[in-house]
Image 1 (cartoon, rainbow, N blue to C red):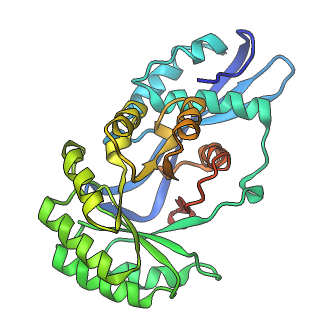
Image 2: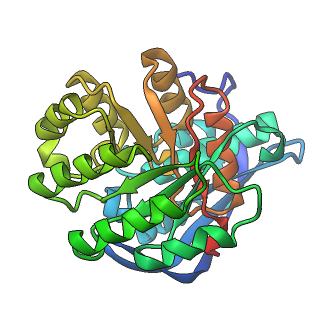
Image 3: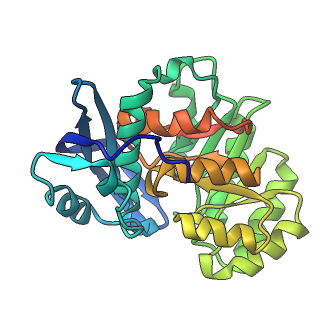
Length: 310
């Protein structure tokens, strides 16, 4: 991991919690999400320059909880050292990401994402609301959309899907996200429907992470791509999936993947097919992830078209 080349500096340290309520509850196969909570950390060096990072945990994906992130922050009175930041355990990946992001922000002071040339994938609401929600976005309409499946019955969702692909702009692509909720038969059914439509960029995590071997087999059987998400929710899982031969898409939630420099090294060294995806972080965490995405040649649309959810 290419850590920042600096002595063991001491930084003034502050943190604040936040809550952001969704405009409408986010429905997934895992349940309903109404409020995003997190922690903003701030580091200030001896010259008075400050950098910020964000702890945006996602326990359903294996990260620490908000309470665990808060407990870590409370261990320090008003200062923290570079050494302590790089001693954060892998059981606190969102904390690792936040504190190194603050160091990077302090050092680089990179521009806002307005200067980063990235395409965005926009998250649609589940169910029939997707049929009209995309029309409420600003023109020109985005070229990539994401739709959560396995919220209703598969028959209901396939019927909605057929209407949705007929309604979306002609050149647009759709990502179907099952959040590991499908079984083998349902996955095959969706892959067949997707191939017939010629509108699906990939199906995201159709099966449980425990069914890696089957997803690997299906990825070779169908032309529609399969993307891993829950299967690569941690850096260790990412390394394992690569070693086991995954050559498809990796959906990476960088804000819960640990130190950003380590993640960037891996993505660059292995030249994997990456989609960076949001965990509904604030602008602070969002900017840190987009800075990472801009450093890679891969130009799939990033999964950050989510601001309309707040």
